[in-house]
Length: 285
Length: 304
Image 1 (cartoon, chains in turn purple, red):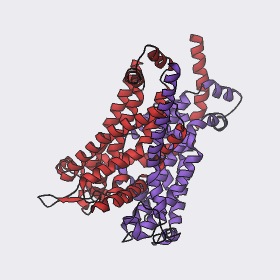
Image 2 (cartoon, helix red, strand yellow):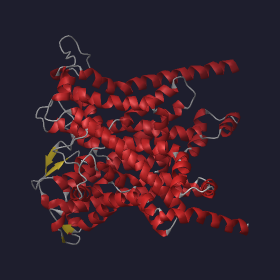
Image 3 (cartoon, chains in turn orange, brown):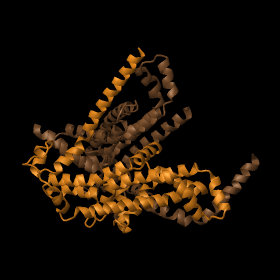
Image 4 (cartoon, chains in turn yellow, cyan):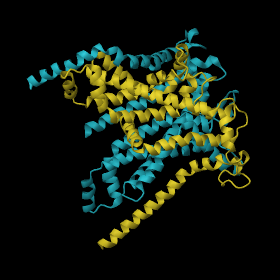
């Protein structure tokens, strides 16, 4: 009897595993379709979307070469700006908000509490609420270049980071910092050699969330950046449809593939942290 | 006790006083950027919603006129109902499917980790890129039937739902898995000994225990639904259009966020005040959902 129910249980698990496996295959099909179509001639993308490229429709690397060069703006330049903006914005957010969060949690004055609650409030404000005035402010202050847009990201993205960092700093026992102070550490040294190392797990979570946000963000850079000079990857891909007249679907798919490869590699390398970071952000936010 | 308390106060002032001197370094950059990037644009946005303006410098006060126009704008009202319907349907589908997948993945089956990795992957791809991937797929299918996602409002709606499910199920699944793993093992064991069926255990033990996760995911998918923008822009861009009896046209698959953007940067620069009023209404809507979530979470904490 027991043996029988055990084997039934095993069979149930096998069936479940197979069903999920099938769903998984369906799940990756959209990405596979992109891969297939990036090697197809433009005319075949729309008519034979789901067929593998054959002798007739195979385009080789032509789509990639065309995608990287067509239009009046090289794709690699957009990719470079995207990379720069993402790295600098994330680094700036991590450094400035963690320092501010430590100050807020430890000083705990009226002003600190006000800043903290404003930050929490900013988390529920959708971007559309501030987009017009923010892009005007950025223009006036000449913050409309890739070199300065991290400041905008720091300002608009501070909310979640402050919220998560303050929550974590409050859970760190004060005794550690007191010991550092007794040993003669000033606040700067206490922060950089005592507090900062302890913030590491939260740093990783916040960093992952900010990287995912900034890298994929379309509207903020679209409105803030001077678009005659600077594009990011999402803006570039959106432009393919809009301003180049007839769309070369093959070339578009090649660019889409190029733009998701780094994301997937990043995901596979830091999967553990990404999933943890996302869960932490969701539960707190 | 009293002694300990005063001691702590002395010690914490040992930390507090020296830090205060470093205010410009620790708080300065963040506060300045926060004012430029959020506080000033937000306040100015509220003010401009009561003004008529083309550029921010020529604004003059018109009271509630902009709000009246926003409510009278047929495209705005249409986009509200379209968005609300979208948010509710995607909320139900995403949560039911994500919970089912998470439940299956916590049964100790082979390949769980691989499956989890795959299901979460679409989350990392940005909305614009996702929109174009699916627009190609839908075109490939629908062109065989002589139609397109840009020609039919219903197709556009369900296209957006499919896209959103594909992207969000993995995300919600992660939260549900965390919740399911925290269900006390002994409660499940007790249910088994008492002879409860698998179905009974799910409804009477598992689901009540993952209620906090369900609350989080419900609100998250609701806000995501209302705030959806990139995917909407890339997949349908609001098409198809309908002409109303008064000659104005409505983009039938346009959601709230896209409607606001189009009102701001459309051909009629006079409607910027209206656009800002719409943005304030949009903010109130999203913020209300956020506050409801906060209070729901609070209640849970009190009960526990």
